[in-house]
Amino acid sequence: MSVLDLIPKKKKTAPKGVSIPAITVPRYQPPLIPSNNPVPPRLLRKLTALGRRFRFVNATERLAQYIAIAVMMVTLQMFLDWLINLNVFFRVLILAGDIWLLVFFARKQLLPLLKRPPNLEACALMVEKHWPRFKGRMIATVQFAGPRFTADSPELVEAVQQETDARTVALDFGAIVPTRLLKRRIWIALAVVTIWAGLMFITAPGSIALLERVFLWPAKVPRKTQVICLSGNKIIPTGESVLLEAQATGIIPSHGRITLTDDSGRIQEITLDPEKDHSDRFSLKLERVSQSLTYTIRLNDGVSDTYEVKTVPRPNVTSIDCEQVYPAYTGLANVKRTVGNLALLAGSQLKIHGITNSKIVKASLKLVGVDKTLPLTIGGTDGNELTATIDIPATGLTGFSIQLTNQAGITSGDETQYRIDLIPDHPPTVQLTYPERLQELYTLKAKPTIAFVASDDYGLAKVALCYRVVQDTEATADPSAPQPPAKRIEMDIGQGHPQNMKNRYVWDLAGIQPPVAEEMTLEYWMEAEDANNVTGPGVTDSEHHTIKIVSDIEKKAEVMNRLMDSLSSITDISQSQEKINQDLGTIIQGKQDVPKPAAK
Image 1 (cartoon, one colour):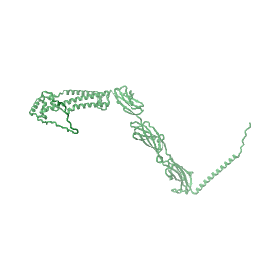
Image 2 (tube, one colour):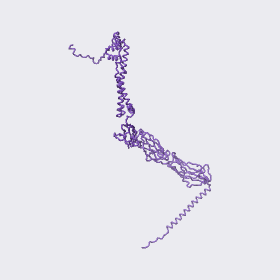
Image 3 (cartoon, one colour):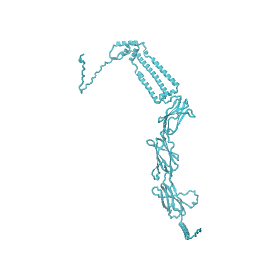
């Protein structure tokens, strides 16, 4: 080596902007030469049987180990569960861990053995290790049967294979795979399973319950005293009382303990005493519960699950709006009403709209006085709006109350009753103002004037003059006998439904059909009907008057009698006035002696 060789030479680089492509030099691989010397059949069978035996023994050995470990893990979990009463979360966690461990070791140790059994070279290596005297002949025999890169002398290869086969004739390849460890692990697994099964049988049915809990089935931890919670989870109205009860089976203790935990986290323990009539039942009544709480009952070594008492405010109506819808015949507009002023016209409708303090699932309207219940329509995005319509009857209804049930199943309890005062639609009034006398005499040519007044609080619908012909003999007839039907002459009331009406009607007696004759008597009256088409109509008759048909002579005589009665009345009045004047003059002109007082 010269000194110049120690000086580092500068590496040649390509000019900037010029890239040199990479040069790939293919690696030379000589071709494989197939072998014409397979493994002797007898040796091949013995090596294949050795591989199967190796896989079976090792797989069975590991399987027995896994079974023993699984049984012990299940037993450990059952013991921990019995000791500290594991909740569902920890039981799921432990079971998942057990399954993960078994799957992990199975994938690492058992599955590779089952999927990839030992090949011929591995089996030959096991033979070489067990009998070193072969000095590589077993490996060479198997490798000579496969393809190679070099060609060997076929006669030499065949001679080696035949010699190796001849030397293995008397050898037992089964002895290469020992079964001592397999037998020990099988006996251990059988002992573990037998002891576990015996304990399960002796401690049943408690052990069965613990096993069920390991696999997440619903079961109670076995105790000397089993606690059966009779009250369970409860939903109660806020401020109400609640009774918490439990029953003991097995060993009955003299007393128990209940642990209460409210929403604020405050924990309270209270002693439970047995009931007088049932020594196995324990109860505690909590008065005026104002907030939700959880409770656990302990009787001897038994502990119940944790239950909840949830308090929910009673549903009630926070606001209520009412609207009165008058009947159409009144012509009145709708009126807003307060629940303190429900004086309603019979035949009206009352629309109710209420807002509640919580979501409602069932609501009804109870009508007081008529023993009837109506459904309330529930609406609103929060389910807290109520609507209903009440038809106001003529009689009976005195008020209403609202019954509610919220989604927790709590009812409204004592419902407020809202009073309703019914205002009836009074029938109309009608009166004959002329003629004033109850009986008049008229000739057939007469046209008497009938004057009347009628009124109604919400409007008149019809006013008619009613009459019928009666005979003089009917005056002495049986009053209970049926009267002849009356005929009607409708009066013109104008447009609409007037509340007051004053009118006159000229009655042409000659136009009555069928015609009337002298000596006949007409009974007549006025009839008024209101427009109430809901609870009515109301119909009223005036006082009945009569008209007697007479001849002209009789009418003149009647007129003269009236005139004479009037003159007689005038004469009587004149005489009375004259007497009064005389008495007054006497009083004015007369002098009375007044006695003087006596001298002292």
